[in-house]
Figure 1: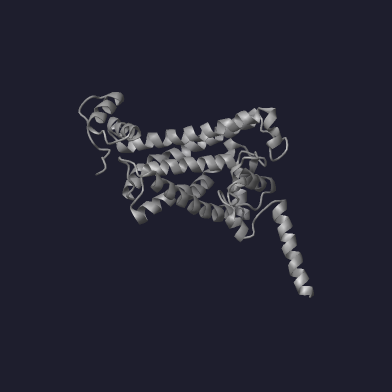
Figure 2: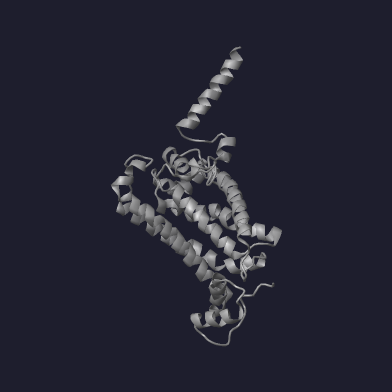
Amino acid sequence: MSAMSNSTIFTAPDTYIGIYNELSKYNVHLNIFERLWASWYAYMQNDVLATGIMSFVMHETVYFGRSLPWIIIGRIPYFHKYKIQGQKIPTVAEQWACAKLVLLSHFSVELPQIWLFHPLAKACGMDTGVPFPAWTTIAFQIAVFFVLEDAWHYWMHRAMHWGPLYKNIHKIHHQYSAPFGLAAEYASPIETMVLGFGTVFSPIIWALVTGNLHILTMYLWITCRLFQAIDAHSGYEFPWSLHHFLPFWAGAEHHDVHHEKFVGNYASSFRWWDYVMDTESGPEAAKRRREKKEKREAKKAQ
C-alpha cells in the first residue's frame, strides 16, 4: 500500500472538518489519527506552514503541560518530603521569571529553527505522509535516539563545564542549584542550540543513513525527551521513580546532584557514561572512589 502524500489537493470542501469527512469516505484503510493528520496538511495547503505550526504547538504544549504538574506539586506540602534538596521549594516569582526567559528562548531561538524543520526533514528523506509506521518501528527508533542523544549530551555538557564555556554559556542554566521542571530549558541560546543538536540531528542523521523515518516518530521522540528533561529537573525523588525499576536510568536523583554540586553526572537519560568515565557525583560515588583507592593502596602495600 503506497503512502498518501500531504500535497493531495481537495477542491471541496474548504473547512478542516469538511476535508476530514471527505477524506474519510475514500480512505477507509486509514485510522482516525492518520485521517486527522492528512486532513491537516490538506487543509493548510502548505506543508512547511503545516509542519511549522504543528511542531511549535506540540513543543509548547508538551513543555508547559509537563511542567504544570511539578508546579502544582511544589505548592502541596504533602510532597515536600520527597524533595531532594530539603525544603528548597521554588517561589512563584522564581517560576515566573524562569518561564519568561524560557518563552523568550522558544520564540527567538527555537521558533525560527522549527520553521526550517520541514524542508530540512524532507531533504533528508523523512516521511510526512500517511499511513504511519508500525509502533514497533517507532519504539525501536526512539530507543536508538535516546542512546545517541545521551552520548552527545554527556560530552557536550561535560565540555560546557570547562572554565570559559561555563562562565560565558552554561552558568545561566546553573542559576538554580535546586532545579525545578520549568528550568529544564532555562539556558543561553548557544547552549540551547548545542545540546539541542543531539535531540534534533540524531533522527535527521538516522533518516539520511537509513531512509526510514517518519516525522511522527520525531514528534514522539521529542515528547519523550521533553518528559525526560523536565522530570530530571523536577527536584523530586519518589519510591516509584523510574530509576528504581531501571537502574541505568538517570532521572531527578541523578541530575539534581549535578545542580547541587555543579560537577559530575553530565549525562541526560542514562548513567553508563558517568559510570564508565568516572564522573559520577554524590555520596555513593564518593564512597566507591574511596573504596577503590583503599584497595589500590592496599595492593601497593603488599
